[in-house]
Length: 78
Image 1 (cartoon, rainbow, N blue to C red):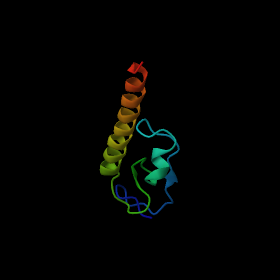
Image 2 (image 1 turned 90 degrees about the horizontal axis):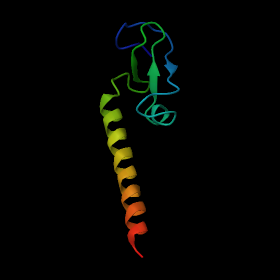
Image 3 (image 1 turned 30 degrees about the vertical axis):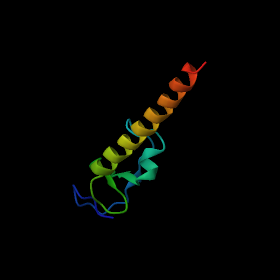
C-alpha cells in the first residue's frame, strides 16, 4: 500500500488506540498509520477515514443514548 500523503511504499502500521474509537473503532474501520509521515488512513482503500469515523461516532452516540433512555425510564416506573 502506498501512503496517500507522502507516496512512500512502506507497509502501514495498524493503529492500536484512538480518542474517537478506543481499541475497537480503529480495528473496525481498518485505520492504519504511515510510518514515514504519520498520516492515518484506511488500510483497505488508502483513502481518508473521516467519514467512517463520523459514522462510527454517531452510531456509538445513538446506542449510548438509547441505553441511557431505557436505563433512566425503567428506573422511574414504581
